[in-house]
Image (cartoon, rainbow, N blue to C red; front, side, top):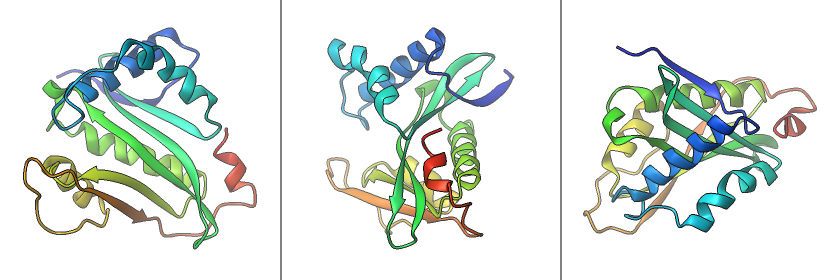
Length: 178
């Protein structure tokens, strides 16, 4: 069994940059993604676009040093909680690694990071027809509407997981940019 680690991607590391594009492209190719890979221009712009976002963070799941999963997240702010929040924009595992627990490990690392920043919640969007992801998110504590959509459903649900505990320090919002 390979050694599994989850790390924060170093966007200045060429290997991490390549891994972000490769795993995101695999997700895009999947039928639950969009059924076709990233176009070359989007692949070229992906990491620079993430770098340009002041509150972006990417976590990579590594198996013996090889990237096999990704969580691409963006810091945001909850006006109702008056606290920062993190939106998980993409959570993807290479097909041969699905069901291995990597999705849960990535979610745990994202939540750990969110708590370090004093976030009040995690958010994400999931397609109604993505039963596997919805089960994972429900198991992890995200709210989820009941039922499973038909394979051709185009509905998307917005889910959140409240993070209990004290709010972070007064600089918690600015900490998202670090």
